[in-house]
Amino acid sequence: MVISGKEIRFSPTNRKDAAKLQQALDEMSRTEEKIQTMREDGDVLEMLDMLIGMFRQFFITTTGVDVVGTCEDAAEAAEMYNQFLSEVAKQKGRLMNAFSPKRVK
Image 1 (cartoon, helix red, strand yellow):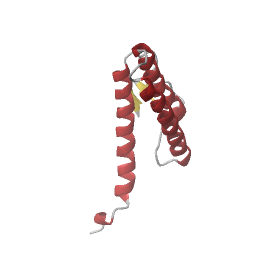
Image 2: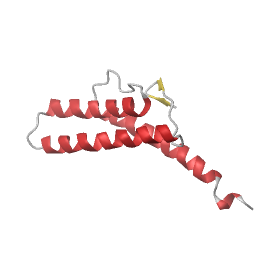
Image 3: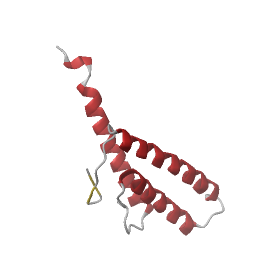
Image 4: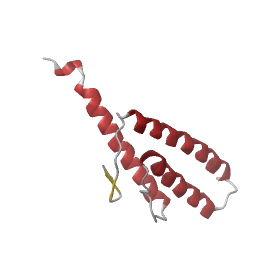
């Protein structure tokens, strides 16, 4: 799949890739907790850096590719993440539909 112009190899049906995805999501949860505690009295720039870094680390952990690169916009980094999750959902859906009893007529 291509995210933000970068070709990445990832298959949610591959056990190793699925394990990397789970690890990355666990790491994100811990980072999100830290960001939530900073919301009220934290430095905005530090929060943006943490958000961008969280998405960067997600891709590195999951795919081995720094998809976020030099992006300095947290919303753009979040969109890359959402695009990735959308593609993963499509791939999982194709696999599950292949075995649906509705295919038998």
